[in-house]
Image (cartoon, rainbow, N blue to C red):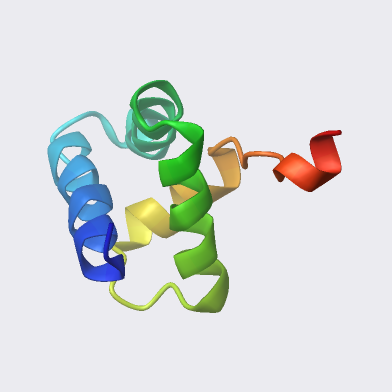
Amino acid sequence: MSPDKMRYQANQIATFFASQPEHEQVEGVADHINKFWDPRMRTKLFEISDQSTEGFKPMVVAALEKVNRPVPVEAAG
């Protein structure tokens, strides 16, 4: 998936959770990504965001701290 598409999808999740109570927004974004994005998608998300968070909504950037970072295959073995 392209970085632009990844940013778009993450930002769409944040747009949805912006309508939720403020104290649930960041947790909601992180929970959604943890539940519905497979490890490859989350790995790509961190590859992009580790280089730059430009283009991500602030709610996505805040949620990254709560998103489960996949363990690299070589580190898992």
